[in-house]
Amino acid sequence: MPHTVSQLMPALTKAAKTCVFAIALASAWTGHAVIAGDISQLYTSDAIVTGTGEENRQIGFRECLSEVLIKVSGDFTLTESTALAAVQAQAAKFIAAYSYRDRLEGIPIHDEQGTHDRPHDLTCRFEPATIDPLLAKLGRKPWLSTRPIIAVLLDVHDQRRRFVLTRDGSESPYMAESLAAATVPLALSIRLPDAATLTAEGFDFEQLAQLRPAELKQLSADIGAQVPLAGTLIWSDVARGWIADWRLTENGKAYRWQIRGVSFDEAFRHAMRGTARILSGNGSP
Image 1: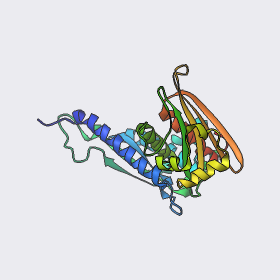
Image 2: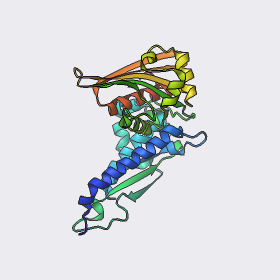
Image 3: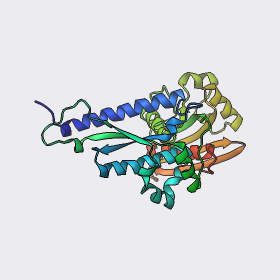
Image 4: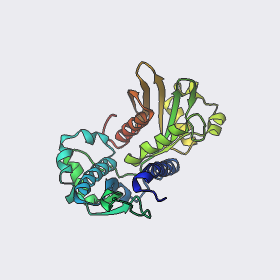
C-alpha cells in the first residue's frame, strides 16, 4: 500500500535530524567550520520553507539574512537589535542568488498533496560587498579571520554521576551531538578530549576547576585546539534544569558567564554564542 507524504514525514524528519547531527559532528570534530582563505560559506545560509511560493520565500529570505549577519559577525546579540527587524523587511534586496532543494525529492506526490505542501531547503547566497556595509549600519563588523578550534573541557554532574564530556565516551552521546549542532549557526569548530588523552594527562573532573589558564591552554593544544573553553554543567531540581558556568581567557582577559534552568541544548547554544562574541571582538558574553 503506498504511503502518503504526511505518513512519511515523521521518518523523514528523523532522518533529516540524523543527517544534520552527522554533518555538525564532522564539521565540529575536524575543525573545518571556516577554512582560511575561503569565507564564501560565511555568506551562504539555509532555511526550511514549505513550498516555493512567494509568501514562504520571503519568510525564508528574512531567516537567511538574519542567519548570515549573525554568522559573519559572530554576534548573536544582533537578534536583540530593533534595527534588525527593519532590515529583515527588505531581505530580498540583499540576496545575490537563491535556490531550492525539495526535501522529499524522489518521493512521489500522493493524494491531494501538491508541491506547495512539500518542505524545501532554501539556500541564499550573499555578497560581502552587501553584507559588510549592512553590518556596519547595525553597529557590527565582519569576523573574517580564520576561526580557532575551541577545546570544550566540560565537567558534567547529572542526577546519578559526574564525568568529563569526551568525544568517545558512553556517558552521554546526545550531549556531544548537541554541542556539535550548537556550533553550526556561528561557523565554529570544537574539539572534545578523548578518554585516552584524559588518562595520559592524569586529568579528571575534580581537577578541571583547579586548572590555570596556561594549563587549560596546554590541554587544549594536546587535543588539537587553540582556545580552551572550560565549564561545568550541573543538573538542578531547584532550577528545574541545567546550570551551566563557562570560563574563557582571551588576550589575557578572563570571562565568565552562566545560564540557569535550561536544557543542555540551550546551555550549549549559550556557550557557543558567548564564545563567538568574545573571539570576534564584539564584547562580553
